[in-house]
Length: 418
Image 1 (cartoon, helix red, strand yellow):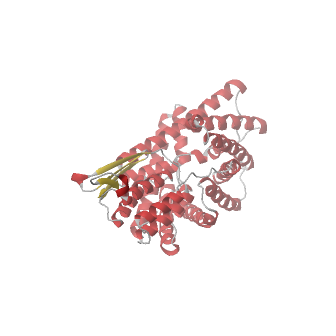
Image 2 (cartoon, rainbow, N blue to C red):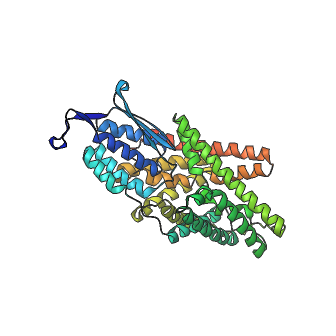
Image 3 (cartoon, rainbow, N blue to C red):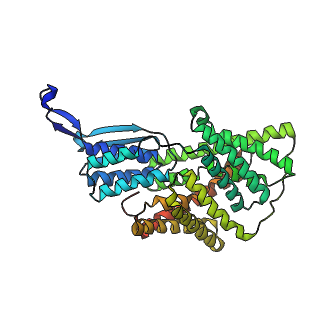
């Protein structure tokens, strides 16, 4: 929408000319910032509509993983804007900062110009995470995932080492676009080669557990879950695009692992395997705590929010594991997602925190990324029937997660915020 204003006397111009409405400028800037922080398309559209309504704007929005279309004004006199964007991973620290601005606008504490100034102060160039923190986050997540997947000390130490090297590649990819485009296949290839060398040196280990744990951070399980959510809520274009993006990541990782495994097999011969030696049952709990710490690093969360992330991970893990023992894995995931969704709404209402602080890490503990990777690798090994069965199971589990989150929002709706 444009506001027609007379020119200032010192300009020497005559007649009215259009000046951008600060309300529309704020909504556009907010949309770009939230998209860059990894907000899903369905949630982003709803939030922008709420903010525009609060500011007195007539507006419509269409969001995909790569673009934002915003139209302001009545349909016969709309002014349309398009923002080209790139798919982004979730940045909890940025989402929490943006949430504070959004809440003040929705409560009427800030007008459009004040909110735009506050937003501009928050959306400057983000400081890059130190390479040491990134490497440590990858290593910690891989090591803890190896324990959760049932690995022993060999698998845990191997996954930690490979995860650290993948973190180093991630640090390089953040500075070089050419490396970033090939990040997942390159990381998967590196993991497969290093795993084979480690198995040769140690006399064998569980290749499945070590590979999945090493690559767990790269699995697009959250993207897959968001895609199913968008499709379920009627955002068909965004959901289809995000679903294909997840599939391409799985395919690239599967190709990288297959290429690395074949290279080692041709040059070094058969790689020995062995069943993992189980650890004491109590070791699962330190692993869940440490994986929460790795999520805090990889999701760029503020230090003060670690407690919320730990609470979310524990809630999702305990609820899903307990229900899976009684109802099976699919319904277990439904119960886990329902518990995370209820907890997210309670925290947002009672403690005035963004629900994303609970929902994102709590869901990450549950997402079926490792199963999706197994489906792709099975197909690459010509096990088509097994691959299709596993792929169907992935979709069923993802649907269980989405149903649990939607049911939680129905029982206890989230407040109007992130």
